[in-house]
Every structure is written in C-alpha cells, then in structure tokens.
Image (cartoon, rainbow, N blue to C red):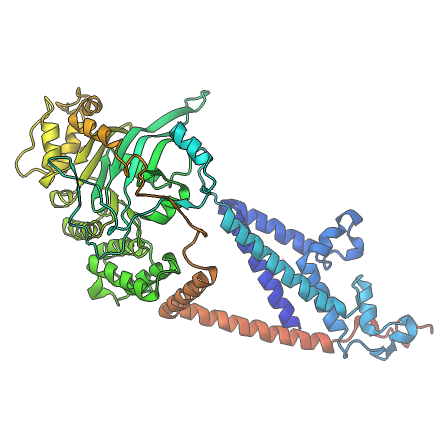
Amino acid sequence: MLELLLLLILLVFLSLVFFLAAASPNLSIAEPVAMVCVLFYVLFAGFIVSKNQIPDWLVWLYWLDPVAWTVRSVVVSQYRHPELDVCVYGAFDYCAMYSQTMGEFSLGLFDVPSAKSWVRYGIIFLVLVFLGFTLLTYFVLEYYRFDRPENVALSVDPKARKAKANDPKDDAFSLVASPCASDVDILGIDARTETVLRIDRIDRKKKVEPVTVAFKDLWYTVSAPGGPGQPAQALDLLKGITGYALPGSITALMGSTGAGKTLMDVIAGRKTGGIIRGQILLNGFEASDLSVRRCTRYCEQTDIHSKASTFREALTFSAFLRQGADVSDSDKFDTVDECLELLDLDEIADRMIRGSSMDKMKRLTIGVEMAAQPSVLFLDEPTSGLDARSAKVIMDGVRKVADSGRTVLCTIHQPSSDVFHLFDSLLLLKKGGETVYFGELGDEASAMVDYFQSIPSVPRLKRGYNPATWMLEVIGAGVAERGEKQPTEDINFVHVFDRSASKVRLDFKLTEPGLFQPSEQYEPVTYGKKRAVRNMTQLRLLLHRFFITYWRTPSKKIRGRHHFSAVNIAAAYASLLTTRMRRARNPWSQKCPGDDGPGRQA
C-alpha cells in the first residue's frame, strides 16, 4: 500500500509540472509558480502544521492538498496495521486507559482520522487529481496557443465577406478544395508569351492535388519603439505586395535581408503579431487558418530530427502521422518511397540520421514535409550554410518536388547561377517591402535580365556573371563597398515596375478564375476534424519512436540503468522504512522510573 501511495503522489506531481509547463508562456513563469505550489503542498500537508492548528478559513487548503491525503493515507495504513492496532503495546493497555487501540491513540495526537476507509479515499483522491491535471493539460495544449496572432486582420472584398457571412455551410473547419490533376487544367505562364497553358512537366502519376497560391495587396505592419518619451510608431514591413505561385513551379522570394522571409511567413500564417491586411487565396478562395495548415508545409532553415532514427523511419513517421486515416498503409509507404526517390535518399534510406552531412539533413527536412503530401511547400533558405555543390544537389531535389505537381515558394539569398536557373518565377522586394519585379525568369533568367536592362542607367550583365548577384546589386540589395555610389541609386524601381508590361500582365491575372477569383470548378470542402489521425494513432507512433530512440542511444540506456537502480534502491528503502515503523516501539509506551506505565498512578 505504501508503494502505491508513493507512486500516485509521484504521478500527481508529474502531472502538475506538465500542466504548469503547458499553461505557462515561458520557463521564468513556470518555475516560480511550481515552487509556490510545492510550498503550499508541504505547508498544508498536516505534518509541519497539524490540522487542528490550521485556521478555519484556510482549512479548505488542507482538504485540497494531495500531499495531505497521501500523509493521512500512509499513517492510517501503518498505524491501523495489525502489528500496531492493538490494545496492549509495550506492556501498556491503551484500551483500558483511553478506550482506543495504540494505533488510534497515536493518530489522534495529530488530529488524523483513524478509520481505515481513509486509505481508500486517499487513493481515489490522488487518482482524481492526477486525471484532473492531465485533463487540464490536454485542454491547454488543445485549445490555447501562446504564439497565436494578437492583431492580425485580413481585409477581404465586402461582397465576398457578405456572401461568406450568409453561407450556412461555412465554419471554422472549411478548407479550399484541391482539384485533382486529372480533372481540371493547371494554370501556367509561358516565359515568353505569358499565355495560359498546361504545365506538361507535372508527373500525373503523383497523388498530389495542385493548388494555386495568390496574395493581393498584402500589407504587414508592426509597432516600432519610438524615441525617448515618444509613443511607438507603426512600421510597414510589407507594402501592397501582389503575386501568385503555380503548381509545378518554384517561385523565389528575394530582396533585402529578411524581406522574402517576412512575406513567406505572412502567407504561411506564421506571423504571431502585427497587423496583416490584404487577401491570401488558395485556388481563388480566401484561405482560412485551417486551409493553410492542411494544404501547406513549411521547411525551417534549422534541421531538427531524431538522430537515432533512419531516413526511412523519419519519413514513415511523418507519413503515418500526417496523412489521413482514409489513406491506406500501402499508399503511405509508397509516399515514403516516392520522397526517397525524389530527393535521392533511397541509397541511404536505412542509415541512421546521426552523423549525416548538412545537405542530407536539408533533403531529409524537405522529405519529412513532403511525406504529408502537401500541395504547397514553403522553403526557408534551403541552401543556407552549404557549398555550391551541396546547394545544387538540394535545389535539384526541390526541382523534382515541383515537377511532381506541388507549388513551391522559396526564400533564398544570393544563389549561384546554376541554382538560380532552376527557379521559374521571381518576386523581388526592395528595402521597405515594396515590389521591384514579379514575373517569369525565363531560360537562364533571360526574362528578368531583359527587364532590368531595358531600364535606362542600369549596367548590362557581364558575360559569365551571376544574374542573381547582378540583380541584387542593381536594386541596391547586394554587397557594395562603403561609400561607393551605385549608378542606379537614383532609380525608383518600384515606380518603374508599376508602369511596366509585367505589372499590366499581373493586373490582368487579378481577374482570372482559380487564381485571384473563385471558379465554379473549385468548390470548398469541409473537414470533420482538425487532425489527420486519431489520438490513439498519434500515441502509438510517438511511443514507438520513443522506444526506438531510447534503445539506439547508448547514453540514454546507461542513464536508464542508473534510473532503474535508483528505483530499486528507493523501493528497498521504502520497504526497510515500513518494517522499522512496524517494529518501532511507541514513544508513549516507554516506562518512567517508578511507574508501571505512562499515565498510571503510583
């Protein structure tokens, strides 16, 4: 019984710490709150301060304290044991003197109830407290997010807003339909004619639902601290950005440091503060938070993986956890094989991730997101920290990903010529978040080069020079020597683009169904649940990966042996303590000199 009570109070404290960690925004808040909870638990446990000494207006804390219930259950189980719950103990008759057994008399000294039923009540109470904290943790993790946007507002067309408000089928779980590639045409733009056509290089065998991504008049405003004694000022990081990305293509987001990432984070719904204005559309329909989560995947710049898993296991874990239950297991395994083939990881599929090179880790990051079969893939600096050869290998894999029918948006900073030529479209931003160029790159970036060279005072691209580096230098976002005056400093590239043929073609696309406007072919669908798989499936997959990781990590196994030894020592100590408590002489049974027993008259 003692071991069971110790286990239950341990689980109670674990669930308490888990709840505080989930409910606190950071460690600086969770730690002091946990210390205060422990302080109250110990203070009102009935041991340091007995129950009869606690003020009446605070006694409710005693009855809510799980430590108090544990102490009460432990002492009742020990002192009501047959060895101690006797009338005569140590040659002293407690029943004759106090009408109580020795155990009942000892419990009464500390105002502890002596009924044996309190042991069962304590066990039930501890189980309920453990379940209560676990349930609270579930609700906090499920329904509350500390990184939710606080001041995000997407402005939409008034007619669209009114139609949406009157739609009884609309709810928080609506998702834009993703038409199958075999049923509808896919929009594409030729690099020379800018006409609507099919993208022939998409592999129709791939089970990917193509989705167009469009953003119209997108603004992002944050609060910037003012000077001493001055209020905060509004700072626009994005100013009226309009563009789109098509299935089967790679769209590069480039410009001044941080501009492309800011735009991509806004489109992906990853900005947690500030004010967002404008429209974000998927297949011509307004994108909801759920639609973005279910249709898109985001590859971070930092590669974080379970290093004890193999490449295949990492992709399998992602596929089974993030694809719906309506997808068969064989199809999920086929998805894993497809990702390994697209990213050239099939030869090392059964190797452990630990010790892999950076380019393999980058490809694995992309593969883990691809295993969920997303229609849209966001990449944040996929070539960061890589040499030219590794960067080319990574982008070749991204090219294959796009050719499978996915829409790829990628931020990249000063890529090599070989890497830059793999992109289909470019959205170039200047410092301040304004559009300098948007359109097709053309063969070997010829369309982009022709556009900038048509602007007076812009130097021509030297033969063999990297067009990406030349482009950034032209708009003033490249690397230049301090004090060196650029010949294009006086050119307002934003105004030039607003008056260009590229801007006219972009404005024409604003009326195109399925891109910036809803289409009868693309109807929104609804999802009955937020997640792809059930909670039990998630638990099974997580436990399986945990045990695999634990078994393959030597340091964890050594630490586990130490923990196992510590548990054995603790169990032995508890058993020894129980035995000694049962055999200990009661302090009130000690005889005083000249007396037959405590309380007796000579």
